[in-house]
Image 1 (tube, rainbow, N blue to C red):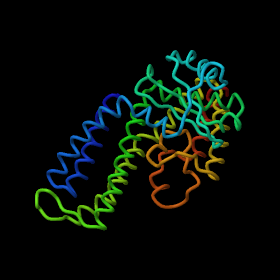
Image 2 (image 1 turned 45 degrees about the vertical axis):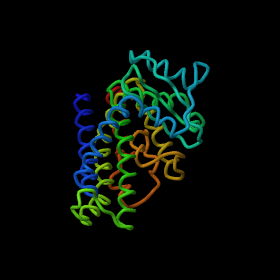
Image 3 (image 1 turned 180 degrees about the vertical axis):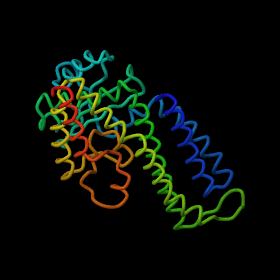
Image 4 (image 1 turned 90 degrees about the vertical axis):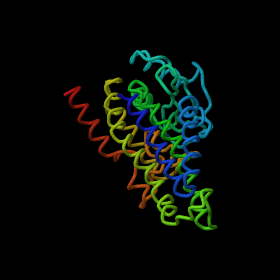
Length: 284
C-alpha cells in the first residue's frame, strides 16, 4: 500500500511543479519542470535521506553509544534489519527516522534526547521511529521533505519574479494572476501533502511503539517532555519542509498563521490520551 502511495505522491508533486512552471514559463516552463521533477524523483528515492541527515549535521555512532544499543535491542524485537544510528549535535530534544526501506534505514536523535529522557522514555521514542521503518513510512516522509524544499524554493523565486517582472519564451505574455496563485498555492499545496500523510502515521507509530516496548506511558512521558521543550526553543536546522519527519513538531512554539493550520502533527495532548488508553488496554 505504501508503494502505491509513494508513486501517487511522486506523481502529484511532479504535477504541482509542472503547474508552477507553466504559470510563469508557459509550455517551456512545463517541460523544464517535468525534466526537473523526473530527475528529482530518481534523486530523492536514492539520496534524499543523506540530504536530510546532512541538513541536521547528524553524525553516525557505533555500538559504544547508548543510543545505538537501544536501537539494536528494538530492531531485534521488531525483527528488523539494524538501521544506521545518528546523533544530532543539539540540546533540543527530538528524533526522526529516514531511508528508502527497512534495509536502508537510519534513526537520528538529538543529544538533548539523551540528556532529557530516561532509558524507558528513550526506548519509547525510538520504538516510535522503528515503527515508521517497519511500516515503510520513511520513504514517503523523506521524499516529501525533498520535494517540499524545492517547491518552497520555487515559490520564493516566483515572488522575486512578481516583484521584478518576468516574461516567458512562448511570447504568451505575462500571467500575473497565475503567478500570484503560484506564490500562494504552491507552499500551501506542499503543506497539505505533508498534513495528509503525517497525522495518521504519527498515531499509528505511537500505538505500534507503545506495544513494541509494552510501556505506552513511557512514550507518553517522552512526548510531553519533548513537546514542552519545543514550545520554548526551535530545533536548529529544522525547516518547514522537514518538520513532519520529527516525532514532535520542532516549530510547536510558533503561534498562529499557516504553521498551525497545516501542522503535520496531531496535538500532543491527544497522542498522550491515546497512549494512556492503550496502556489501559494492555495492562487493565
